[in-house]
Length: 350
Image 1 (spheres, rainbow, N blue to C red):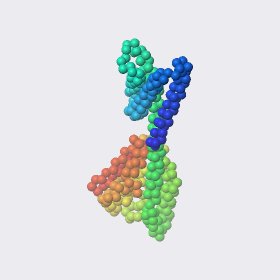
Image 2: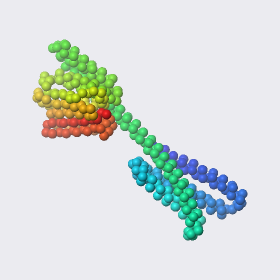
Image 3: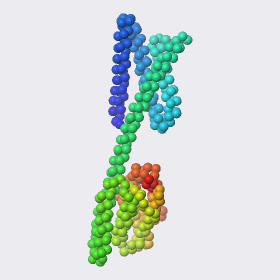
Image 4: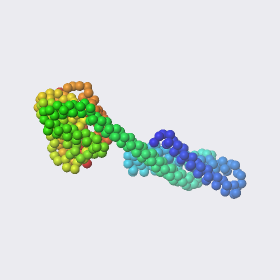
């Protein structure tokens, strides 16, 4: 909530409160005039008392509850400590108001026979302070709740932007052009195989256009996409064994965020070297009832883009996306060792 709106809420609250005091004081004044006439000194003393009685303890209690007790105790759900702190606050507010009345009336010394009336005033003001304290907690709770909604909306918007950026990154024109050219060359050699790869490319495009609009997709569909993506990458090279892709476990009814693993896989293909070597890229996905673990290892050329870029999405953006989609339910480890680049991601799809 904007600071200006919060200030207006506070101003409106105190204006209404002072208006209520004025109406009450006017009612008392009119009745007092009938009894004692136009006694100026009496009215002066009365308004001093009302100012101390109604305003001072209210302000002290309200802003102590609003600024301190809410943040330190209620927001942290320390209810027991909150009750103790609230009791001390309202008692101190009532005492401050009662002493101010005595000072305003020139009673700087409290005689023994004045104690009981003073205690009554303190009790009354403490109740008044409690009411204002509760209202302060409600008001602060409302602004806190509203701010939480705004934060969630912003996070959802950022998530949407991340999803769009992710999808766009996968509609890489270079990947499409290379794949189409490779299929075109393959048509002359093996039309049946070329048709097979063309269908896989069609399935990938269909998946990107229609499936990625949902927050989650069945894990099996994600695995099918990865398998077809790897197959299309393989036709670019004579040695198709430079990639090892293995899935362990049963996808079952698991659902995951769409395109969760593909940025790391694309990064592996982009920066992998030694494609004539067996298993230059190793990809493994392990599935259990509670977790899905993704492993990707590739030999790499030490390029600056390696850490900064992964399939068009930087590692920072990927980590933010994971934090948003799987808060406290994921572990991501990225490391470089000699000429190996390793990624390990474990999520609890729950």
